[in-house]
Image: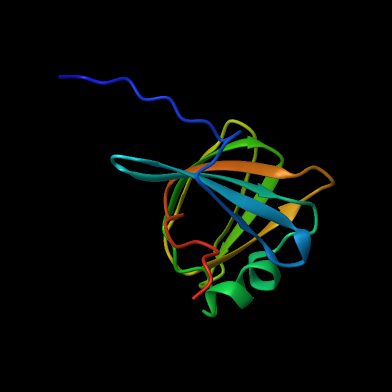
Amino acid sequence: MSALVRMSFDAPEETRPFEQGKGRLDLVNVEAGPVGRAVFEPGWRWSEHVKPIAGTDSCLAPHIGYCLSGHLVVQMDDGETQEYGPGDVMIAPPGHDAWVVGDEPCVMLDWQGYADYAKPQ
């Protein structure tokens, strides 16, 4: 038997704020796992605004995401760097830093990697 499901990021099941008010992660939990919408404010950087929450040297979450707006640079621990913008699909393995480029918030949807992202230990 099939069942339609409707969830909204306008009423997320959980919201995790980033340090210094630099954005938030909204989560909805579907049967396959959590889906997240992150809003990274201008000036946001993982190593400044999530690292204190995660307690790791770099982001250890793998991400498969889609950029809705704004621009985000991801830099792997080995130095490889990629910028993502609206319409881009992002695949980022564990071991990276990231930061917003420009004056516009970056909004990303992510189907992998947000289960424990910015979750206080």
